[in-house]
Amino acid sequence: MRAPLAGFAALAIAMGSSMAAAEIMGDTVSYEIDGMAYEGYVAWNSNLEQSRGTVLIVHDWNGIDAYERQRAEMLAAEGFTAFAIDVYGADADPQGIEDYRRLSGEMYADRDMFRSRLMGGIEAAADLPGAGGPVVMMGYCFGGAAVLEAARAGAELDGFVSFHGGLDLPEGQDYSAVAAPVMLFHGSADPVSGMADLAALLDDLQDAGVPHDAQVFGGARHSFTVWGSGDYDLRADRDSWSGLLRFLDRVM
Image (cartoon, rainbow, N blue to C red; front, top):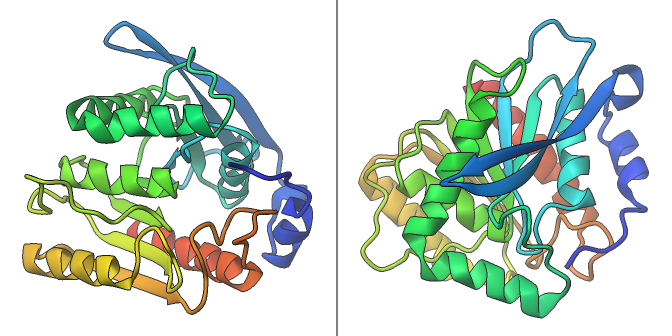
């Protein structure tokens, strides 16, 4: 569950964000998948004639909120078109932990539906004004697990980035269809997916011949990037964001 974003302004300044100098625009985006309505959020820098590419953000288990919108705007300040895709549907309106568990659990229980919604979000991004060029998918926590799901499904993107995501390999799946490099940011003290899970994932990626890298933050717990949470770790947050930007520079 997200905490207030009081630390965002200070974080942006500390990272050297160019948001103040840029005209960062944001808007909701309505789209459909198999006749069901979804609502995402797009951010872009209107001062640029051309985007550097599109970064897709998959939300955490509580759906799209101010956190994903702020991250999208931070990416827009770096010259990207950032699109937070909706996995739950426009009418989901989760209100608490029970809803978050139910909605995320539905995705984990029905991997075909999970993949359909991820692929639908990718298709919706292609219709955004200014879309085009390389595309990378990233996500936090539940969103990080979703990124790996999309990668295993063979999504034809240019990169996949998971921040403290669930790293389990679902039964019957593998990494043979992954089409682009995978980048992982993870805390060594994560109680959800520990170091054994990370090691197993790295072995799987290596065995499948998938280009990959991982940055591990010693002592960081599960939600180390979530501003205001009990797990928040400023150093790990800043360093992982810098690592993301380096990865984007490399693949986009």
